[in-house]
Image 1 (tube, rainbow, N blue to C red):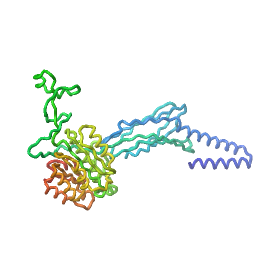
Image 2: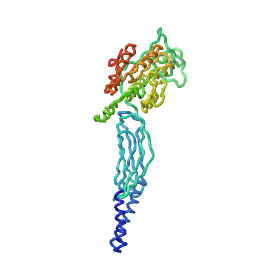
Image 3: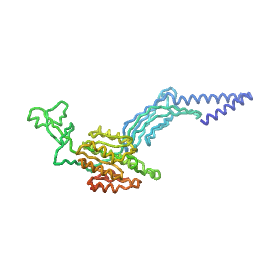
Image 4: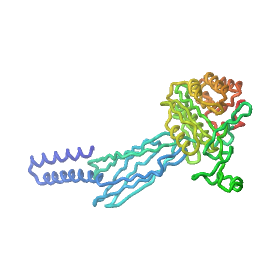
Length: 419
């Protein structure tokens, strides 16, 4: 530090003067400056030793628009008090200001504070490491101690309620029925059988039980339209954003209960996919996911909270760095799909080829829905009007989403539906 060099210079001058003149005053000044340097050095070093940091994270999963809470405890385990200690946090969670300065930490005392951070960006972030910084009362020496322990937090993408989104309906020629039994409780009862240990009591068919004198349970079939595939267009070449404009005009900050999406098609695509997955899984639909981002991501359709967690974990870290057009993805992945399922394509692409691919799936009994992000509202020169017209001409339900739109309103049955 600059002050320490000044004191060392004064010490050198005082020593030279003492040796040259032999006067006691300069010898005393030399001893005093030397004592100050030695004491200050060991004092600053002792300030960062015998300190324990406890970092408590309420949950290692959060969501855009929610608050992540952390609590820090600093313990002084030595018999010497600490004048001041700066706890500098190096987390990469945006707007996570966890650094703090602890003053006058007595011997065997503990000081704590809580940090509440509004999550504004999805992804997997690192909490830590931590650097302890302290100095002596004169500010001559500064010592640092690096604590390499880290933790991680996953921030899920934003989800909104979609109460008016049209549920996909299957088409079975000739009024046929798809027979596929399931251990889930659905609205389709296909028969009865004897009770086995482990069967839920709400599956017991009491009239048959009373008639036969033994426990009889109901068997169920999956819905004809239970499987919903979400196709996300993560090709980097078709994405658009207005992030550079946001640097010029300051956007209002977020707070709990009010969230805004970044003006990019990538973030809108992910938020729409997360909202649709949450929407269908809450209605006991089986939902799958296909996206080509950093790598090929395929989640087989399934139900329940576990499937929602898998989808949200995938959507939290996926990035639009893919190179394969969505038309090729639909054509390639659609080959292995059976009939009577629904495919929802979320894309900002203005390429009509993906409409042709979706039309080919329809000929094979796969119902398609297009969620088209109007890239012109995101600062892109391309227009999606031709794509919307082609979807309408093909009889494929389509939704148009613009930058700044409310997703609940844009993905409504009576809003931006092209039929």
